[in-house]
Length: 628
Image (cartoon, rainbow, N blue to C red; front, side):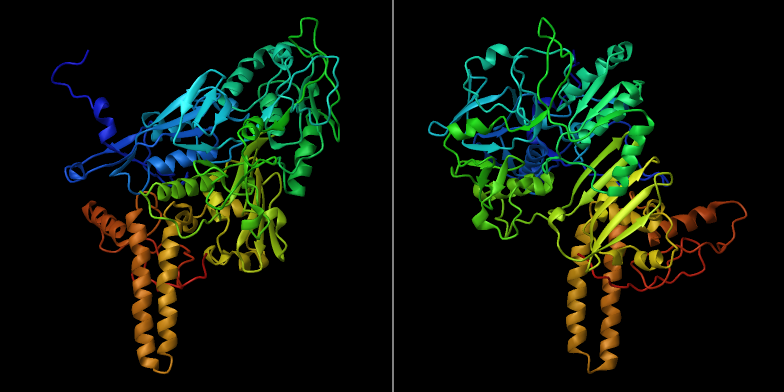
């Protein structure tokens, strides 16, 4: 019990303003302040307490807990106007509830690839349960006339706006042992009366989609190690390789692992680099993993009590919500067809994510499926569109889907793998240039550039640790930001891209504020070029004006470093220089001058910048770069 003088803010939490967590720069070489434990932050002050709230009480129901759904909820709750705009009635419906509820250890985290920044720690920092009601169950029907959904055929959830964010998952359709499977093993006859009667839990079948599935599989690893029977991993996808790596790390011998590859589905993620794929198969063979390629699943046979598989298992990709949409008379042809503003043929139903695709009449690039785009960016755009629809956000001028997609995981023998690419890279037809450094021993890094010098894709494969959340910021950037990287590569002075992008000059690129800095710099430099062109005939005026504008741009960069000094301690700034000088002066027998030090490269300046105490105290002039 709390004493009377103690204060609790739990009952007032809805009156506070939630603060969105930042994705911090990952850095090992410098001391960056970190908290011991993640927490959700709320803020209120006397000025904001006088602002009248705009409460949106529309019933918002979200089906699915995919990355798109989490991004939608995050951007809806932590919007730029959340100091006075409050969404009071949000409900999420998912068969396993909200994701990232459990803290997994390193072994358990290796079961599934990572496709976004969402994690257990990040979800704790958001505390979505404070704002979102979670209903655990499966949607079995949608009634568009009465505007409600039916969960588990018995519970009714009413809505004003319905959002369909169903992701992709592996599903096993279990049938009797005497019935043969087709190659896809997907049963579309959901109305079969016998289908519900023949489904029973199978003890030795693991279908990994959520943390609960991972925990269930992890608890069975000790039993697997005690047995001598083979462990079958089915499906040509990255998830299969991550499972094999986890089995090997847990102590299961490779000779007991049978890896069965089916025909590669273009919807499934696999290794894009031929070099990396070859090295992965070499590791599988080296560890005596039995590989069967280009196989087609035919059937499995169960034990006498139908609780265990004696010979084979299968996984398949399947949209379990599809029949529900068809019955609700929604436009569905394998994907739910939506407009550019994510609206279906029902104005109160919006959809996004792998289950949806754009209307072919509204797009010219041919990229219709939402799986081509970054799920977090898609969810963010849906939140902006919906906010404008209900009149609390400004209507976006256009829907931009330009953020790269990525996949990070651990491949067999614990090699780290990262693949990152711009949307639609598989269908990219322009001339490209490829930069490759290292090998599987030192770390292999493969980067693809387009004709304009933009990074459009890259793959990383290394036994050594690297920071994937840093490197994904390289995709879509111009190589003019990378400190003459191309010249160094062509002159054979760039042995390892991993080490190169760990250098101090690159850390600012990994900041979540860096894209905003590029926008400001582009705006200023566009104005500079326009004014200089007008004053080209007056040389003296031109030079004076140019110096002033370059000084303005330099000040913008210094302000950026100043605002992010906690994350960028490796950058020189007048504030840090002043602190170092004060510390030096306070030391006994301190001298007035620092000794010369090694110079630090900085790609944003014409000259080399000098660290605090160096011989060059004059700030270098800014060299503009073509940035995107």
